[in-house]
Length: 161
Image (cartoon, rainbow, N blue to C red):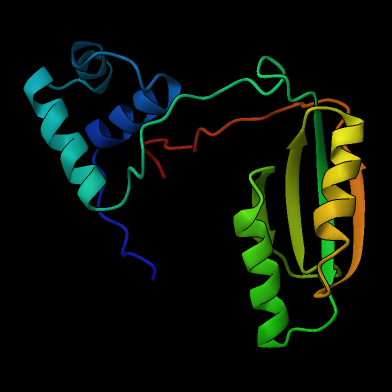
């Protein structure tokens, strides 16, 4: 279910930009960035959470620092779009902790996934033991990530947005 977007004022946008950069910042630091009082920060964050604009406040883990040195992008085409196949694929993705992104696409591939693994042999194990066993998948094409040119979770929340 999609939510209706709420009106974000300049202070809301500045607060969201600040919390995207560092969710561990103190309320005083967030208040300074947003240009509001520290007491308003708490109320604004609560309102943004209730509205579904702020889904979670998390810490970002560096994959390589955590021993996950292999990333791959996989394009998936299903056998057909029957409800059973779509459900089987979605259920598989939901069970796979290695999947950090999965989106439905237009075009030749039905889905694009990002998988992180310890190393190339671990990636191969994931593909063979999980993806290739999924009868809903007709075709997969994998690309190993060689370099991240940009990898961010920050949304472009400019005041003009």
